[in-house]
Length: 312
Length: 312
Image 1: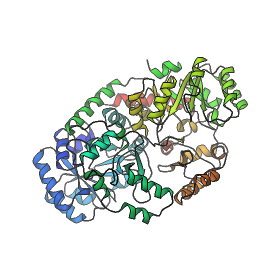
Image 2: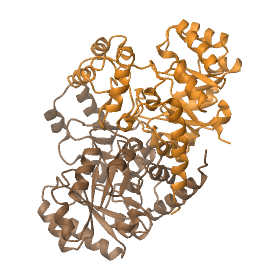
Image 3: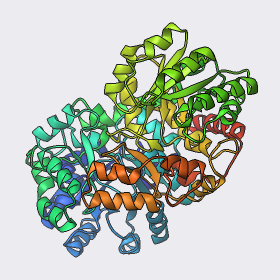
Image 4: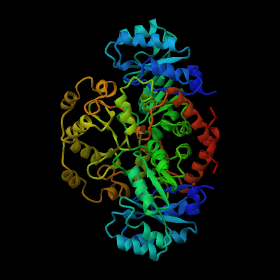
């Protein structure tokens, strides 16, 4: 039996990334109903909106689902109270110190997973008592590690040093890539970009169409001195890249970034001035599908892929 | 039968990267004798040294081997004459336009492979008539593509658009990673870093020890405005990164780089002021082995890996 399926009590070891402005109750419940783990992305939600999404998700599926909580979220206490009150069973934490909340959640009987991008934080997360780790490579969309370690280099390294299950993230949009991740030693996969443009994603339709049109080389990991983030190279992104080349300071970059750019790009569909967060796999994502089809196609492709591998 | 094995007439679809200052006749013949494709790296050789390495390689193995020829090499004509005169059967070209020499080599009965890092050049290489493509991801050591596309994102994209066999490069140092590459659709793999520090590599012993000591995050793709290259973060590299952050011009960076830094780092073992080229997998390479053992261990691990993948 697959360890990731065991931990979450799900059918397929496919976790949907809890992405800002994409992952509301519609997407999360659709993925869970299809046999994966749907995840509500709390990062872009006010506390009461977050609560509403949890309540709606519970109504829309009787399967397990999780929430993704960035540990730098400003109203942390309110979010934690909502998680407890609404009896959320699975919490995926990211962007912060896993030592801070893991044992608290564990004491409440919650399954805790932490997202890492290097070996130091993988060990830290395991020591904090997490049930599993999401190891995310450089090719992933949105916020990302400073080491720039890619999935194929990262997963075997993390598997070598931790005992808990490792969920590979970054560059996984089809069954061949899922098979690759499993060959690297991953116990499951987290899929972001491919779910970000499903029918059930809350993202703006112009954002989804932009991703469909993306070709290779259309994204870049930028703003490394502020917080590294992978974006589509649009007017905003190109302007920031030019500022970086010209030696602008972290403060100047932060000011140019301002607030609300991810909402503008993903939710409001401002393709020139918003942050259009997406992974490198955007180059091979050419259609907007139902989340359920994404899960089932990925599993079918995965099975075909592993059966086609021949001994040497 | 594996397509890469067919094209080169070799036992295992493992191609040794033709790396500057590492890949002389000793390494190439050892890899070929072990059943892979050994490759002499012409990029760091004067023409007559190159000829000597070919002659010695032919004496050291009766198996097929190739040469890697960067198309920006200054004395191109002399090198091509040597390849013809010494009856080299396999040429892997890189860093330049594949349309320039492919048909010439093909007319001489030579098998031609071209190294690419994006879909545009993959199509260009196929149109030029190459027999196979090496598709190299961002995680690879040394010179690298500007798009920064990683192996897991690159390989399925390239497989989708070309018919010729695709050899995956970047992030492949063990059999699990080889299995991952094959799951992505690759027909074979090119292995650089792991061979760069074998006993038979011409690299300096201090360079090899430095790679053994590398941890994750110890390399960076730098000098993007000049020619992108992945290096160990040493004094030289950190100084250049600081210059980039301060907005120095391409000319200033080129001047700081100067000439001969790769030789200094790899061949002379100057670990602070040389270019110490290596891939991200340096973090998981912990021993100096015989090239033969690298090949055989990789194949054994590959077989174990694919047999451990379970249907879902």
